[in-house]
Amino acid sequence: MARQTAVVAALALLPAAGEAIYFRDKISWRSPIAPSEMVTVEQARGWSDTAIWVDARPDDEFANDHVPGAISLNEDRWNELLPQFLAVWAPGKKIVVYCSSLSCNASREVARRLRKEAQLSDVFVLEGGWEAWLKKNR
Amino acid sequence: MKTPLFAFTLSMIMCLGARAELKWEQTAVELHPAATDKQAVGHFKYQNTGKTPVHFKSVHASCGCTTAQSQKEEVPPGDKGEITATFNIGDRTGTQVKTVTVETDEATNQKTVLTLKAEIPQQLEIAPNFVFWKQGEKADTKTINVKVGKDFTVKHIKVTSSTPDFQAKVEEAGNGRFKIDVKPQDTNKVVASMLTIQPEDSQKVFYATARITNAPTAPVAPTGPTAPARPTAPTGQTH
Image 1 (cartoon, rainbow over the protein chains, first blue to last red):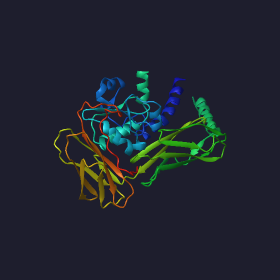
Image 2: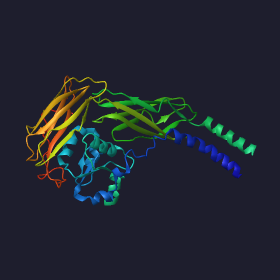
Image 3: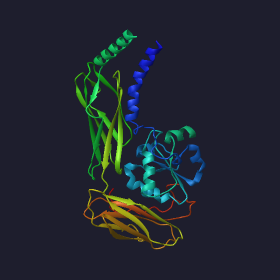
Image 4: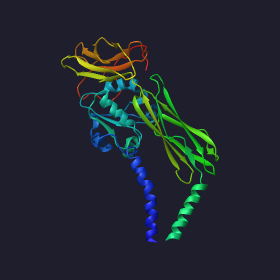
């Protein structure tokens, strides 16, 4: 009986192993950014006034609710919103970018563009995004 | 040992034969929208090759920038259809990969991930698109580098500052590259300017920001009387 179970388990593992190898570069939870560029809600709150919160979600979600004082900067209207963000940025400020949840990618893209295109440093992505902030604050 | 294994294999084969099955023509689509396109649309065609109907339980896009629609809720055996995924490009650039997750009531393979890859052409790559000086700092020239994207030809660019507080001078660096030297009149007051960068013979407009920043302890609030100066947008601009 045990042998049969082992055979069935081994048969079931074959396609799973094949899929894991085939999709090794497409694992959805793999973060494309370094852990040092991520920040938790607690860490970011500790930065207090030295942090600028950037909301990378679409306009309607920002309009519905957002982190108090956050600035909207999404890729739908990047060219229009970026100058507004840069108008409030100051040297020495830390930038905390967030999107909806752990699985969203918008904050990573916005953070990447701020580093690459505007060549700003101290740009961080909020772990867990808006959902995590809500959990800790409401 | 032989009999149970044979029975197991036979039951698996029978199940495979009787199940409803959605066969996808392709689960990944690569699109090459034009520089002026606002949307990229991908079509994912399928056919129910099983013997029972398939029902869509949900069709969910990975981001707010993508919408996905199924033509029908139920797919009878032998029937064909497609999921249409529309990606709103907005101001995104470069390679964009968006996914649509389709859930059905099939006995196996209930979840299928459809991938939409779009290569968005970029006429000009501008870096940095932000130059700043601290208040009181020496008013040195700072350079913005412009690179013409592949598949584009730009011989000249025109740069206009929205305020007279900054001067911008274009220098052709050859090989599809330009240098924009930006210099403030002085750095005594907190000012900002939007630099409009326009390729010759093109309607597309690009932007960069030049700014004199105040002390590092500047207020965070995005609006209000204490907010620092925003760059003045040139009139009649398009995005």
